[in-house]
Image (cartoon, rainbow, N blue to C red):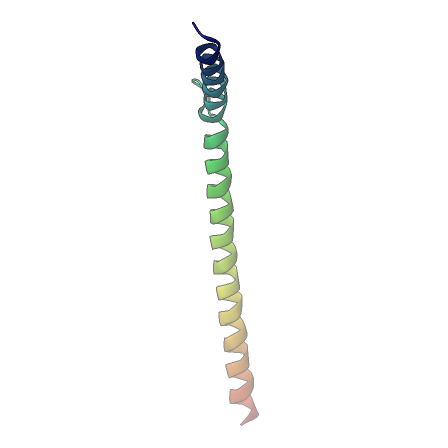
Length: 71
């Protein structure tokens, strides 16, 4: 085995180790954890959008009521 081949095999070993850490070996890896964090963030963003929409609707209704009673 040449020095180049040994270096390539060593690099592949390191790459394999990093991929196992990223994807996980029977356990959730970092990639799965990141996906879960993104999902939680998207759910919280959707909740906030819903809350702001509801508050905006209530504010609009209050403005309509104020305009109605002014006349």
